[in-house]
Length: 298
Ligand code: ATP
Ligand code: MG
Image (tube, rainbow, N blue to C red):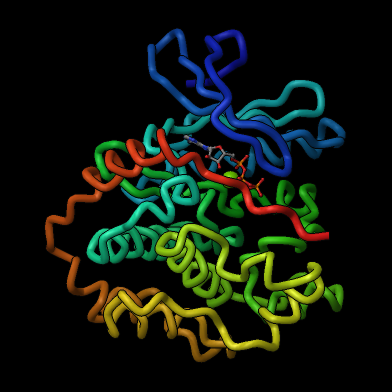
């Protein structure tokens, strides 16, 4: 079916990103609760139409590890993108609430399954793996959103702000600083996965802003410094997995098949891990310990 603005009853704002806001809505004709993302773009109608057409391939993207897509439309210069509402929120919000290791492994396994699905079935890289783009629900499902499905949308967003809290791999940071746009491959998503796992465990971006006086120093640390590691309380298997994701040389990072076969992810493959229980506990914890945003670097 086709979605349009008149069909929605609007509820609270779920979050704000660099390019717009996400709002909880109810699709009146079906009664389904959805998340409506508004992306502000200054584009002509033909480019906006291209984006809507390209987003259409999302109708084929059915996987338990990928957010369901319900449709997109544009009004004036805004693209509206309608997707499955996830009542657990994003991984950055839940991060740092004492995540048990088997839950961390299960969440990681779901992310790898999602990335593998995008690559194998849709022939795309994610390009924006980070905790805010990993959504969870109270049933314990973990799903990816905001992947690079539309070339026109990606170009229009012109990701020039590689600044603070960059989840980009060293090779991507180097490439972009030299003006290249194709200096990276799927293994760059594997780096971003590694950083996201550490953030889920420690509760903040792994290159802490208080350590660096500016964005340049932070990016220099990503490109030239040692990669971050999981804290001591995690098992050697977990540390080994993250270490492999965060290898500085892109071609030495494992592919998705190899990551799924890693003993850390193998250990939760058929295990009934209580992700839902952790999401519920994390929400309780956040009621008394609200998430504090890290200060932005200049
Ligand atoms: P960026 O603009 O760099 O992509 P972002 O991912 O934080 O950053 P948005 O994609 O606009 O920005 O999302 C903003 C917030 O909205 C997310 O952090 C998440 O908490 C919430 N959100 C997004 N999609 C959904 C959804 N489908 N269900 C529930 N909450 C969502
Ligand atoms: Mg997002």
